[in-house]
Image 1: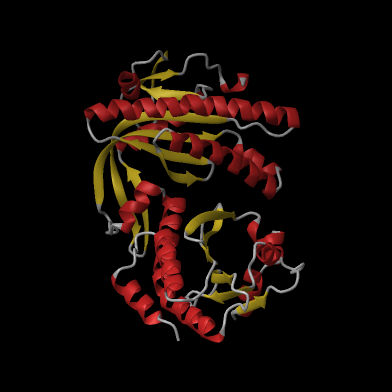
Image 2 (image 1 turned 90 degrees about the vertical axis):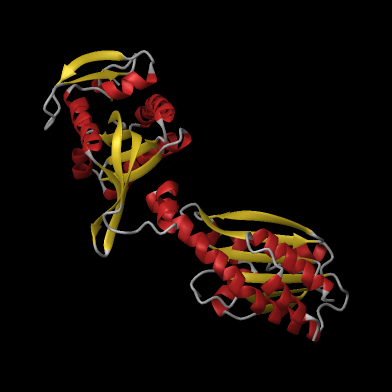
Length: 393
């Protein structure tokens, strides 16, 4: 057996564990230096992400590249269906093929054969979680292929590497799921251990509250797939503009969206308000453009309302002992919600509170003072220039 004990010591004491890319590159270099004639190695790791099904790391002659697989197409793609990975996924056993004759059933192997490879082997990684793809493959250009000692060394090396990779995958899945379901800032707080019920942090934030108009009627009259497509188109625009301008979506509440643009000091408060307003302006442009396309296609328009406010909020955990929610609460959030109600009553797409209008110092249209539900004093409100009523869009 070749010097796999060196790989074990390297993994325990010297290997770079901060990134899969560096870890796998170092591992491949150690394999070659131990005497196993590897020309190309590939690592395939499936993850849980709404857009990416997994990552492939390909090492060849001291260089390494990383490729993402699209979640929507990867499981049914020809490259997967006609691949060693599918066979290993289905059998949970190693796959080996000598590349002496054309491999017309597997385009990847034929590509490697034409590049000079003579032998190919793939091993499943022995992860505790067996529900997702986790494989490592090796190819050689040695004329005789891999001998028995090389295959034994490779299989043992893969087993040694496996727990280090699984640790990366589990953390990547945890971070991706938190980012997807609660957002990056909130997800980071949860990862850091801020999970005590009732534990909140008082922060200043520009608050975004928006919803779809006429959604109840749409959901009553339209098939569920059409309703979901309508919602996802709407949420997609909101999520993109909020994220691009430095905010974070906290909640999808039915057809409504709650987002914040956090601040850290008085100067940052003004910047956060300007980001929120810029996001609102882009949001209106994006929905108007989307609605032009929808009208041309004869589909329902995205009719919306949006309220912007700024103030202090309690940011943290509320809920039942075993089911917590990371959110924002407080009078400022309530006012943003009431402002959204007022936008509907005034037939306006966008309403901006006086508090936020003071911070942005940009031309806005003064709509005068209006009474908000459950708020004692009437509030002065504004809208964006060149904004007609909802019905005019």
